[in-house]
Length: 286
Length: 286
Image (cartoon, rainbow over all chains, first blue to last red; front, side, top):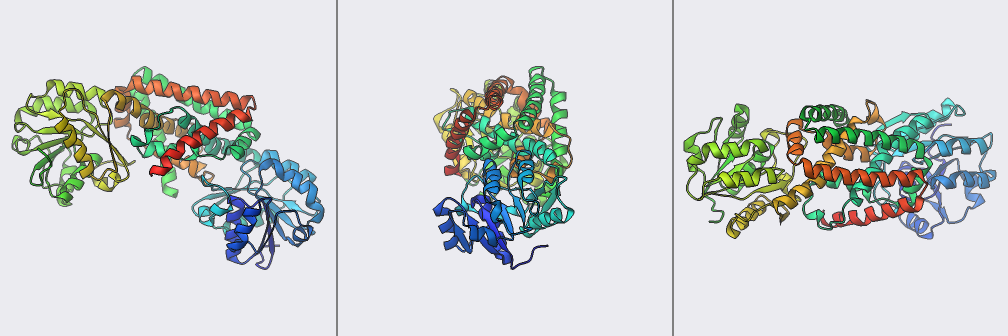
């Protein structure tokens, strides 16, 4: 079963990401439904044509209509939602998610899920420093990466289907990693960078910094504007991987600090040449 | 003596920054001259109308014509240049620079300078991850900060003149700091951020990162593409201030690491709320 345009897609959790999925899929022509506990999110989405139907409670009728369910909930809520409401799921549907951590969700949900339903997890590597469906924008998926993180329980057909979803949404690159590979990688490229931005911004209480700063500081602290409820949860559920990445980074900082202390100009130059060469790989692709 | 359009301005060191100054000032109508040891830089600038006259040697005739001299040289070269060639300076001119560190240059140059000539140091807080006059662009000054760092030896008139230069070049904000305040601040907002970017990029030899990464990692490592010759010099001449900033940052990272280890969600949330509140000051001004 591929992506057929007259299908009904249900978004559970209509925030920035769920809303952006809804916009992208609605443009293609799907019948979009959403459930969110926040009445403001549902009414905004209905008024702005982002969804066709919306509810603030879990309406069994709406769940039964869904050919696809996409979870945009906070990580700790997904397993309970599936456990409580899977009795309403249409036979044989596929479900996916947008969660930024994988190990802590994927196995639990797959283990408790009905035999006829398949959960294929994915992580859209896009985001903004604002939240809510009011700020949703499917254009943030362009030039971004989309990662499918299947397990041994997933079928090749469902994995392809989930990759197709990334392509339908306009992601420029679709990749596949195991949940373990994903969480290690995300601990580095996403979680560690957010920790660094927060630490950097918390270093100084100088409110005049903005008058002296250049683009470097602006760029490194953009993500210090952070949704603390979501990110503290993401950090803690991926704690082992994030701590390992923090240790690696701080060891590297220690090496640079020692070089500076010892006036090791040659050593500093070598480190900078390495970082320049590695960063060049990113420029080519952007 | 203010900024009179028929003046002759000499740029010594025609790189990215010197070239961008030349473009901006030429557009206003000044007669632009440049000295750079690289024949390619001079011929490019002449062919593209960035300067009116250029030399690869220090031509006494050209130096004698200058009403203003702006240094775009590497930090360690400026004092020697002034010592060797100030005998050619026109009586009573003003000189300034674009150097990213101040204490190590300002006092030395002011001490050896002729009595009739005044050196008013400045730091244009703009840059790009490319270099050379070929990449110069005066538009990088817009929405950027320009900092004048006078000493007790400077006159109020010359300080105003130097602030006017920042405005002429289109900087959106012109500030004044002492050389000491400047170097401490720059150790934080510029040098520490470059150290972090280099450390982050040097952490992992995974050449496939680009396939999985989001904008956060791209933003935090943009400046890991770095001119190692210039930046190793900037780091080492500001070593005391940079080491202090690195220590502060790493202590803050340690606090966050401990909170994560202890599952201190409340503590992490407080740190994120603080960083979000502080970062908001930047959003208003951009």
